[in-house]
Figure (spheres, rainbow, N blue to C red):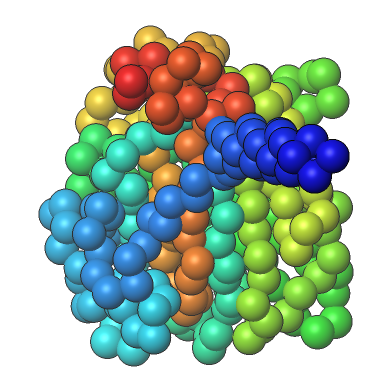
Length: 300
């Protein structure tokens, strides 16, 4: 009898162990592998482009690394002189989730446009830093706009701006330049969590502090630099013919870029979850959350 009980318990332990191993395998293939885009020490993996200055010239030390943050600082500026800047990832992305935290600090430069006060953002599906003209203000992209309130007015954050692009909103083409979100109003010196869910040229979702504040679809290259209804054209952009020929074509991928447009702002905890990867269940690096296949990445 004792021998039978011993055998029974041994078999039970084997079954339990097998179940644990199977669950470990399921957990591993569904575990999200978020990657930090900022190492907290330097700008490795990023390119700088500031209007009127060559690629990777960090004019007046605009972008600074302090306390594991990327800081946009204007203490060395005299005047802004429309020197809009952006910090671009060197790698483009198409299907992904992006999350970061930002806060507004200090005051924007006095000679900067009024609309730039308490204004920044992160550009999605952006053209590369290398392709931006030396005197170009903004890259062709979709701006996940960040704003903060003045303590009196309602000021939503997480809206979308469309330099050189347009979107579809609630089933209809939106040809304006800014589509406001429905977010709450936040103030200076508050750390705000921002997330973007980007699915190629199909759907993009803006999330602020855990709340979805804007959803739009079908991002496209526009017919003008701001919008079809605005008199800003492609004039002044050296490769304007390229963009004119791409008008009304899907915007499927691009770089990610942090803005510097006269308002001091801090960025931290910048992470990305790439949704493109190996979708072969037999591969070692298969993940269940990939939504687009690139089986050239598979490892066996």
